[in-house]
Amino acid sequence: MSLRPPMFCLSFILLVLSCVSRAPVIHEEISVPHMATPVSYAHCYVTPDAFYTVGGILIKEDLSPSSPQGFTFDLKQNTWQPWAGKDELKELGTISTAKIGQDIYVFSSHLSKPAANELRVFHSDKNTWERLTVSDRIKARSASTLTAVDENLIVFGGKTADHSSNWAIYNTRSRQWKVYANYSAELSSHIALSFGTKLLIWGGFEKGKRTKNGYIVDPSNGDVKALAYMPFLNERANAKAVATEEKLWIIGGMSDQGPKTDGAFYDDSFKSWKQIPPLPYPDRKDFELALIPDRGVLLWGGRDSKNAYVKTAYLLDFDTRLWSEVILPNAPSPRIAHCLGTIGERVYIYGGIGAEPGPEKLWMIPFDDIKSPS
Image (tube, rainbow, N blue to C red; front, side):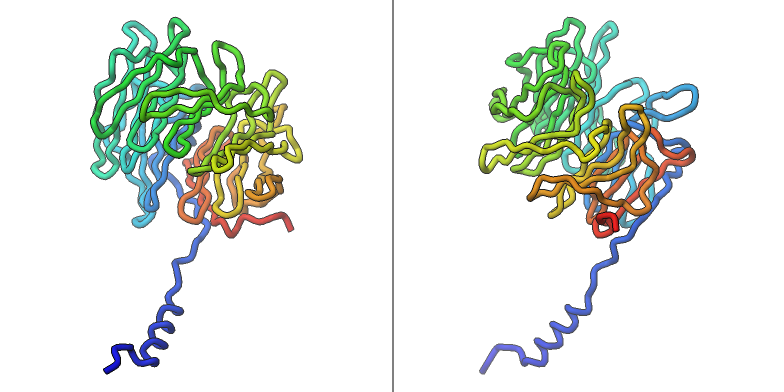
């Protein structure tokens, strides 16, 4: 007796599967009801089902206080939820953040006496805050970076009272700190990016001067190794970078000669650097980058040397490493200090200076809508 299903059953199953279609990917502009004014320099994160934002600076006419509040947008329920403890971060000032799983960590230091560091975690699944212990061996600092690499948080760089430094790893599973002194220079305005199982550090102000030095930090053993020589980029600070597990793009930044839009591409499979040309119109600074799967690196926002906001968007092709202009239909007004990233099959834009007055919004633009000018 044959156990194969009759052919008409197979045909019926295939017909049913062919009729099942995915939900449409649509353009959305979502107001944030709890934010009466736009926020700049916010920290933004995503999961497949949610968008998170915390901190930043509230834009007002006469003063710009730090925003102590966080919000979650639930993509399934289409609702915003303010984080518990709306004043939790009020006294912290400048913060650096990182996300591991559903937890968002906030690190802050202040140099006033007594100088101190603080680490807190927001558990998004419970809508609760928790204060964590910080090793007193970590020098107090401002403008440091906090980067998640697997289950570890790495505090690196920052400005200190005596212009020297150390760095530290916090293991979120064991809740233990390890503090290292094998990199002690004062470093700020640098790239700090998770790259595979390691941390990439590049550029910034090192000992008060712009640098093109780069380092690979291994959290498994605390090693800090100089990055392989890369001739394409000169010394610069505030460059932008995006990465996958094996590929890395560094673009832009401010050099001693002014803003730059060229860059460098690193492929870990071949251990090699390749040059990225400047934009067709290279008078551009303060832009943001996002990776568009299977297409390239999106560059949007920023301003020119006269501080005029620039709306033209560009896409760096993954294969050719050449820039081409693209249109983001129904995008917001041009701006700086905004969040730019991807969530599902859409690009998101949130906050920024130069934003229209009125309630804050979250823009989500489908990948398929991003096309070359006709």
